[in-house]
Length: 58
Image (cartoon, rainbow, N blue to C red; front, side):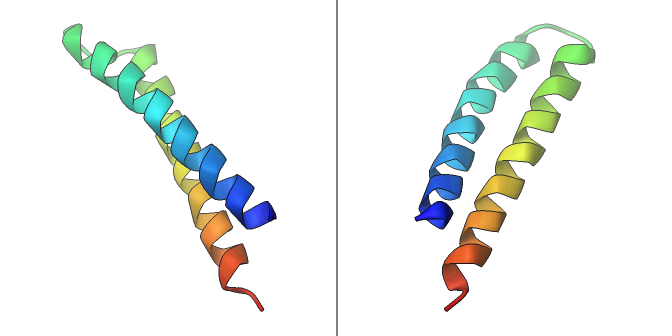
C-alpha cells in the first residue's frame, strides 16, 4: 500500500511541477523559479522510483 501511495504522490507532484514549469518557460531567462521546478521534478521522480522499488519487493 505504501508503494502505491508513493507512486501516486510522485505522479501528482510531477504533474503540478509540469504546469509550473510551463509557466516558468514563458518568462525569458533562468532564475529561482526554474530551479524550484527542477527540484520538484527530482523529488517527484525519487518518490516514484522508491514506490516502484517497494512494489517489486516480495
